[in-house]
Every structure is written in C-alpha cells, then in structure tokens.
Image 1 (cartoon, chains in turn orange, cyan):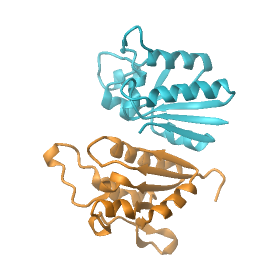
Image 2 (cartoon, helix red, strand yellow):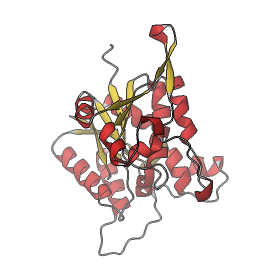
Image 3 (cartoon, one colour):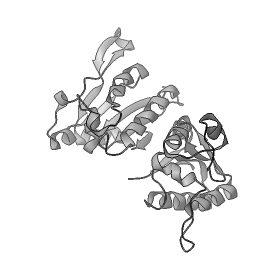
Image 4 (cartoon, chains in turn green, purple):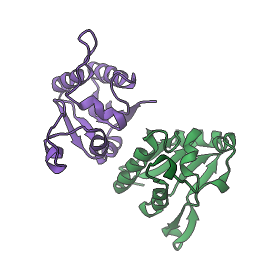
Length: 136
Length: 130
C-alpha cells in the first residue's frame, strides 16, 4: 500500500434525524471517496439507527437519506463496522439493518456484505489501527 | 507537528469552539504548525461577521480573524454546511442570487475536499465537538 494512503475512519454515534450530524457525515464520506484512501465507517451508540431498514421520514417532513448508504459500495466504501453491543442495547440485530453490499473486484466481482458486526472490543482494535478518525 | 483542526459546533452555544481556539493558539505558541482550521456543521457560524456579542464577553469570530491574520491561518468554512446556515461570501452571493454577504475577515468558503485533504496532509486531525 502506498505511503500516501491513510486509514480513514468515519465514526457515527448519533441517530439519523434528531441532528444533522449523520447526514453531513455521509456527505464527507461521499466527497472523501474521491481521495482514494482506505476508508471505513463505524456505527455505535445511537449511530446504529442510521442503518435501520424501512426508514420513513414522512411524519417529520425531513429528507430520508438512508438510500444513500446503498450507494457506498459504488464509491468503494465497503467496510461498515457496526458495534454488536450497541445493537443489542437497542433491541436490534443485523436483520433490522439495510442489506448493504459491494462487488469485490478482487474476487470476480462477487457480491459481498458491507456491514460487519463486531464486538466492542474488536471495534476498539479497529479504531486503534486507524490513521485518521473523523468523529460525527 | 502539523495539525489540522475541525470545529463542529457553533460559537457560544458550545464550548467546542472555545477549546478549538485555545488549542490552536497554544499549538502555535508551542511552535507547531496549524495547516488548516475547518469549520463544519454549526461550526460554520464561527465565520459570520454579523455577530455582536455583549462587550464584556469574548468575541469569538473576531478572535479567529485576529489569530488568523497573525499566523496566516487557513480558516475554511464548508460550503455545503454554509449554504444551509446562511454563511455567504462574494462568490456564493452571486451564485445563489443573494443580496448580502457575511463571511468574516480571514475566512474562506470551500468544499469538503479541504477537510479530507487536511486529514491526509496533517500529522494529526483534532476534532472539536461532542
């Protein structure tokens, strides 16, 4: 890997519509994808709600930006780490999240899952391994 | 060391902006380089020249402008966040058909790429917010 490439992690800790952090974080991810860094996203605490499937914002008259997560695979953003304990504390499981996939160019474009559920301890190790953390 | 600073909160509402300023000032005094200060989310409100805080309180916007001038700082306000919140410079005024501008002295409006670039080029990106 080139020395110019850093490990970038975008840390998402907030629910999607109560504040604008989640949406504006996603905007950075999409712009940042053009910089060819080694990007991953982390979802913990209320941030796990960002990936819940079937979001309907009609009642709050806000833009439902959750379909944008489906595009991340096309931007080569393929590592979405979701903390297991954060899901469990909110009565959620992997089945409650949007199925997000990418096509692996190193494996004959096989379709693979982007979401990886990891334990709190594993998340800590993954964070430790990063060069740059963007916290939202 | 080469630092980049990200400010995610607005002035007065949240201490993050004070902490970012104090950190930036201390780092410069200690001989470090601040390659960019990037204002995002409500942090863009650090860059409006329309604030008029009470005279017995700190003037957060003016303080950034002065520190910027003193150290030739690159104070960058995110354009997407600025458009949502009404922070406008000459170019934005013309592009979006507005009749006023309010960008404070020493600040400039630019894209999110400036934030990502700051993460790449700096030794440490320090984020101030919740």
